Length: 59
Image (cartoon, rainbow, N blue to C red; front, side, top):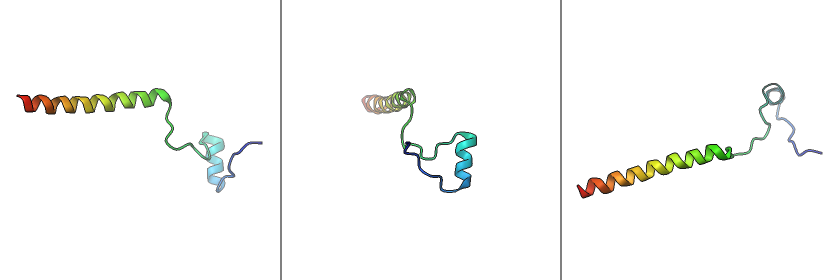
């Protein structure tokens, strides 16, 4: 027995069957690789901003 929710209407049922869209997608869950890339990009941006501020004040 699965814990799938019953579709709200025929349109969501059609989307689920034809396009493969899940009925209840998990919120906020990206694949690990994409999360790591996002963390690296955000971390690099924050570090470069801090370095620009620090070296701008030193000069």
